[in-house]
Image (cartoon, rainbow, N blue to C red; front, side, top):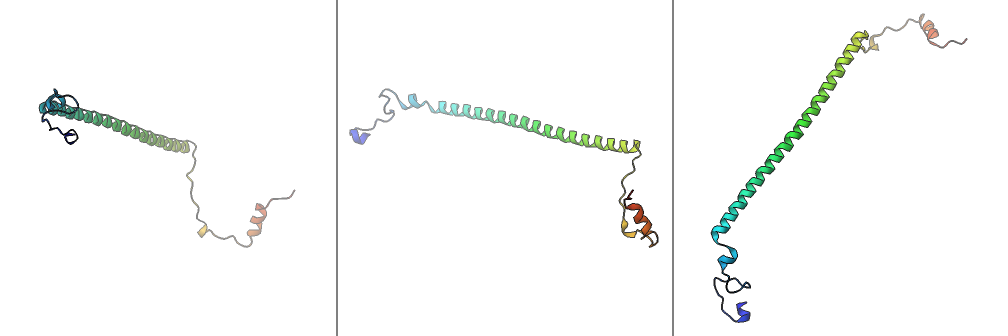
Amino acid sequence: MTLALETIEHPGRVRTVGFVVGLREYFGSVSQRRSSANVSQEMMDELGNTIKQQMTEEMRKTIQEQLTEQLRNTIKEQVREEARAEFQERCNVPQPVEHDDTDATPLSPEVQPEVQKSLSPSKT
């Protein structure tokens, strides 16, 4: 700008605000800027603490909900198992036994026709 107007620079002045306003008056003193920076840092610290507290509370609630759900499912399963066992005990229901036919004795040739006859549907 000094080149275009062919004037000299006036130190300590701020352009476009008039010749009566100095740098300190326009931008503020160094101590004012530092104190505002400190306030900003304090605000940032406070904001960080607030966010940290909110996140901690949110995580606590989420973990508590998950644990409660797991506990409910575990209790439901235990109640089912106890009810099933009590029902089988009251009804004298025998436990299922798996059969192994590998060592079954084959029927003798004399008995086979009788067994087949008894198993086949009868015509009346």
